[in-house]
Image 1 (cartoon, rainbow, N blue to C red):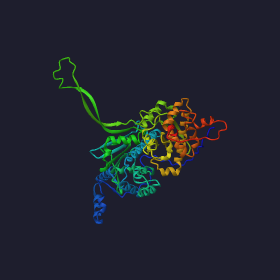
Image 2: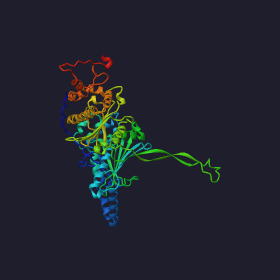
Image 3: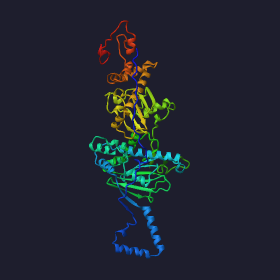
Image 4: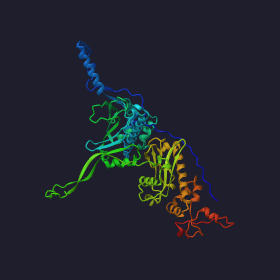
Length: 549
């Protein structure tokens, strides 16, 4: 007698996040508060009328060549060095006020946001280089990160599409998403986490979690685009100026974000801290990430002191000396195997990914499954059943710090705290879920409203049960015995708590019976061996076989 499987229903409603070169979709630029020419402040316009008329008359009487030369010089200087000041959109100002004055402890997310933006810019450049012959580039875009303790800054630079003046105004001075007011209100009321900032298209402003002044140097890949510098100290305005005379020009195109760190954020100038955050949030970014760091190498050189009395023909004596070097070093990004076709991934690659991603060097996973969710929401996932009980679950089977299912969006780590992704009776299952359809930093509330979590949950549970059944059906019965000894207690919780799946869980339970001796038996096996006419099953519970005796 087999207990039938519960049907799986799929419903979905989700919103895709628009990728842009920096933050948001462009709107029409606001008018500048002041257009200030560094070389000509237009002082004539402030003169009294009689003096202004005299100045005009004098200019008219000057030789034509001198007038033309002066006009040409002033026009060239204005076009080359013009600096303009703009007012932030009201919503931007409120977002920054909340961030600057907040006491949120999770400041680390600023690097995730800025690196995600940089990756989007690189992705867009690569796409345009393929589709637009005029924009073709032979150089693969990359991301560079440099901490400068002397200057008190950290710089995130990408070789992406860059931005024009209008794009700087619109992307960094406006928020083009209708949900912003709700985010501002929720953040102000303390009902939303600053970690959700990117969901509303304002991820760039997370820079002000750690910085009191931000500079953005950028050069668009559009032909003839100048290098520009955007700057703001998170007040009510920002400035944009031409930056072609910079000592550090951007070679082709891209964006360089310079964060002048607050006194309470100086830990981000440590290379080890930067690398830690990159490994946590951005280890699967598909573009090279290079970190400026100091490294020490050891090399052998002749030992002058020992070789003073060296006889002719004798081999010179050597010594080992340290040599310190500074420069960019590329991080080893892990390969997101879930993006590949399952048929192209070997068993060794699955095992290696498990050990690397979950820091389980000594654990061989018992089973894995690699699948794609399709429909209104699309996602790719890889799930594993560990070979042994994870250490963090050995003391507390429902340890809140044991977050084994990771949610990614476009290869960027988002969260591992969504309890709704998996029921707690599957706490031991490890894996990753990655979707291009979900916006970055999607909140639990938004996922619940769109039923996305319910869709993903049903599929993950179904695939987990499939893996457990495969182990149970294996010809090698010791495999399921090992599984049951490690994780059987979780299935017992599942049969109690998961009404929807208990019919599927029941055949996987194991018990001792009066006839099984030291061997386990399943409920189905017990029923098949019942005496003719037997209508009841008696049972007793206990901590173990001895406790129930």
